[in-house]
Image (cartoon, rainbow, N blue to C red; front, side, top):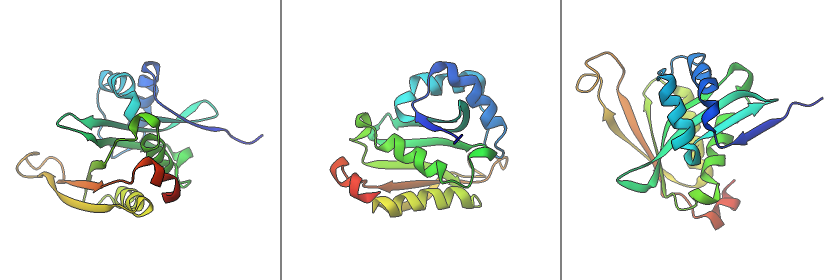
Length: 171
């Protein structure tokens, strides 16, 4: 029997499964279980769960930037061992962007450390597929913001993203 992959908005009862997934995906920063519950409830319209045969194998948390509501900020991308190597992260990003309620998003932002090749490939690939520009700048500096406890986080800004009518041809 073939495995079934389902992409859907998260629900509040997904919070603990998301927490366990992120714990199993170093070097992702592990937030509190409460934070994951909030991500799954308050930010469900801009986040996604990937389930393989009923097991959570992927999660992306995102939110609209309060001062820039047409900008989607992607907070974390987590894919389990079982879900890797299949383009799942890219499919999850597309799932969020292509929802009817997100058709007004013009820009996608995220932060990536300089050495995170997988994330750079994911987001540069998204920009390429969507025909959008990529800009980067320092958002949180290792010295200034992290007191040397974490690598510098680069702000990656992708956009403008094509409008929904154009998105269908951009896939």
